[in-house]
Image 1 (spheres, helix red, strand yellow):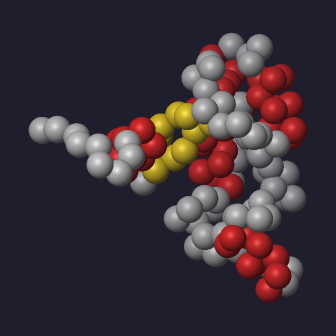
Image 2 (tube, rainbow, N blue to C red):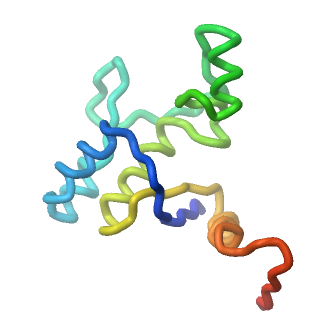
Length: 128
């Protein structure tokens, strides 16, 4: 089970904005089939499934920058990878008005992420 929650995000890359703008005019069936697809250097006909756990860096400085959040790029598959990124982009296309999406490993994690984005220290939640 994969969970996803949609959220607003202030900054998006121009590439992502352009792809989303052009795909907004697609019908739902086309969004499901083609929306959010990113091809690797191998030009596959459908999205590739990335099952690796880590990624290669050109230098120690690049790796440090990614881990600090200063540079864009993938770090570790549990945080994000190209497969998850495509899934999130498709969810954004299907949910009009959403600017960002975050995929999680379970529905429980998605619920936790949604709550944690709204709560602050000292808040109380009563839940069954």
